Length: 88
Image (cartoon, rainbow, N blue to C red):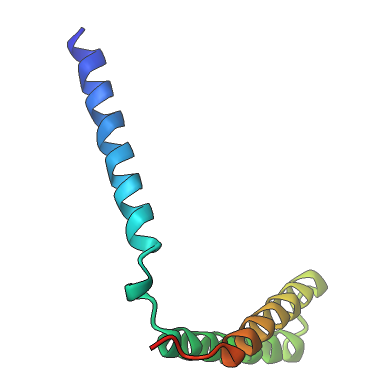
C-alpha cells in the first residue's frame, strides 16, 4: 500500500508541474516578438552556414536535403514573424 501512495504522489506531482508549465507557456506577457525574430535570424544564419559546410564537404544527400528543408521552414517562420505587427 505505501508503494501505491508513493506512485500516486509522483503522478500527482508530475501532473501539477505539467499543468503549471502549460499555463506559463501560454502567458502572452512572456512572448517577446523582437526576441523571437532575433532567434529566428540566428537560427537561419546557423542553418545557412551548416548547409554550406555540408555542400562543401559532400555530406550525405539526405542530410543536405534535411538542412535545406529546415532552412526553408525557418525562412517562412522568419517572414511570418517579420510581417506581424508588434503587440506592445
